[in-house]
Amino acid sequence: MSIELKRAFEAPSRDDGYRVLVDRLWPRGVAKADARIDEWRKEVAPSDELRKAFHAGELGWGEFRRRYLAELKAHRETLRDLAERAASETVTLVFAARDVRHNNAVVLRQYLAMLGR
Image 1 (tube, one colour):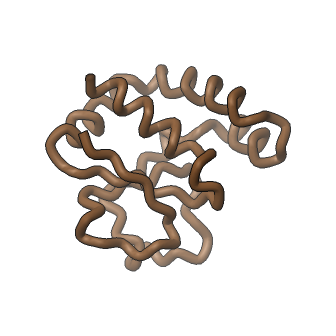
Image 2: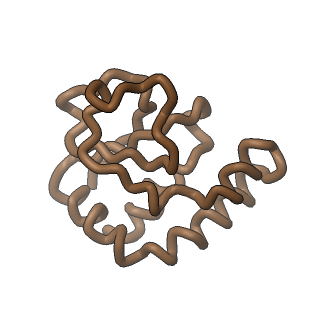
C-alpha cells in the first residue's frame, strides 16, 4: 500500500500518482489548473467544528486525532475505494496545513492503511 502526503503548495510530480485533496476548503493561492488534483474528497475532511477547534488551539493533537477518527468511521464505506486504489497504485493525500506531522491527512493515511488490511 502506497499512500503519500504532500502539501498543496508543493509542485505536483509524476511520482504522486493519484492526487486527492482532503481538505474541506480549497487551498488559498493554489490555482486549480496547477494543483493537478484528481479528486477532491471534501466529505472526509474534519467537520468545520473540529477543524476550527484544532486550529484555534482548543484541542491538542491527541484529542483532534481521536475525534477525527470517530468522524472517519462514519465514512468507512466511502473510503474503501481509496484504500483499494492505494493497494495497487500510489495515492497522494494533498493538504494545506503548515504542520506536516499534525494534520488531517496524517490521520486519514493511518485510517486508510487500516482499511486496506
